[in-house]
Amino acid sequence: MISTEKNPDTTDAVRRPGRWIALAVLVLAVLLVAVDATVLGLATPFLSEDLEPTGTQLLWIGDVYSFVIAGLLVSMGSLGDRIGRKKLLLIGAVAFGAVSVLNAYATTPEMMIVARALLGVAGATLMPSTLALIRNLFHDPRERSLAIGIWGAMASAGAAVGPVVGGFLLEHFWWGSVFLINLPVMAVLVVVGVKLIPESRNPAPGPWDMLSVGLSLVGMIGVVYAIKEAAAHGMSWETGAAAVAGVGALVWFVRRQLRLPAPLLDMRLFHHRGFSGAVLADLLTILGLSGLVFFLSQFLQLVQGRGPLEAGLAELPAAIGAVTAGLLAGFAARRFSVRSVVSGGLAAVGLALGSVTLLDQNTGYPLLGSMLLVVGVGAGFAFTVTADVILSSVPKEQAGSASAVSETAYELGAALGIALLGSIVTGVYRGFPTPSGIPADVESAAHESLGGAVEAAGALPAAQAGPLVSAAQEAFVDGLRSAAGVGAAVLLAAAVAAWFLLRGQKLEVADSERFRSPTGDSGRP
Image 1 (cartoon, helix red, strand yellow):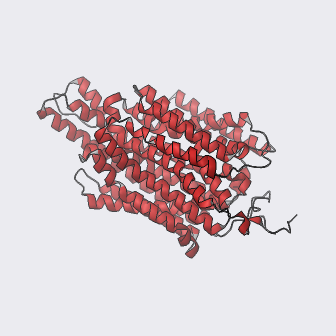
Image 2 (spheres, rainbow, N blue to C red):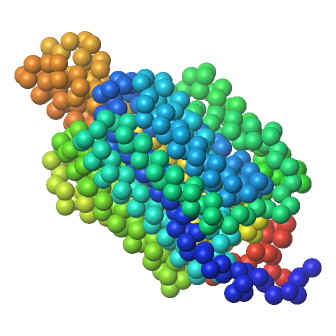
Image 3 (tube, rainbow, N blue to C red):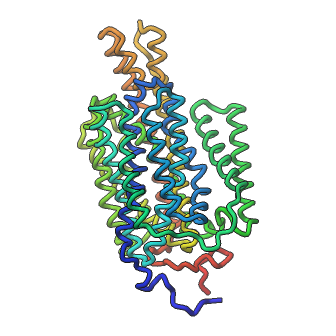
């Protein structure tokens, strides 16, 4: 039955006077998460020197946050739809700030891994709420496109602020200080958000199915863990068991969602080609980018000898490009088409990553800066438009679940990227031949990580330290080039997939009734 009432999404009544102020508060949460992600890479050399993690532990420190958050995002997005997205956002902000203190004062690699995992739990409550609240604050499609552009621009600004502020802190304080910058941001978010952010929830959500929550968590972590271990160490019975358990849990999860009257995740969302295409584009893009970005700060500092602050400033072009593109993405997608903007952005990032295969230890900054600028512009266009497609493809009652799917693709891509591309870097690096005469314990430490090699070389005479560090740096760059080549191939494949999957998709469509059809089409006669 088609309603004869005027669609409330198009009336002036839904244009809340304080919606832009509320948006400003929401993007503080995005800023908080983005800053935390970028300062970790910058702090890695200092963390390695202090905590002395093995190469495997260092990868876990980098990706356990993404593993946990990927496993919980769908559950937490659905929980926000049920208990209220504002409530979940504020709970997540408080928890995120508190666990950041635990990260700052970690004293062992194992403690740091646990702290990062707990931060993932807190982040999973925080991240789906921001996009879902934007969907419910901005019903006008053009305003929503601009709001999403600002949201994405602030995420990119966080990527810029993190390295610069983190670099300043690392040059004046200990590495744990980079996590404490979360506290003032969290405080502002909570104090202002309580007053200005309107609450929203699904008016008839149904019960929160705990079995589905467990299946989602076990499935995602099992699959990602298996991929990581297989990439790093090859197949083993433990890896195979984790893969079987993970896939089995996800299959059970999907089948259960199709049977439940009020599922944790409405699987009919994936019947819409634009929604599925946008999610796939996000996952492949982050997969191609994340492993490379994780090691870029190490290249700038440990290979090219830049200080932390200089390394942070060197990464600014990517953030500048992403901020600019994010603000223009909605206009560009309407002026041209969704698929041309997304595919063009992904192809640009892929070609920029391809240029990294030409990198060497003495590559000048003009090439690096240009590559980072192109990466930022391409990613800014692609991510902003895909986020808009995902949000406008669902009714507002399911905004939390849809946002969680988008964020899950992002975090799963990040985890897989660090696991797969990071394992390529590590695998190539560990094979480098050490100069003769190096003690066995020093040689072992040097093969764990580039940071370990630089640290271990400090105890050697200059005649031995120099050749050891040079050999380690050369091997690290070889691994970085190999990973960049794989990342470029992934991005170009994503561009081709987006061109076909996003055919005919338009940002102007914001019909909250489009998923009433059980076949998943537009719902129009």
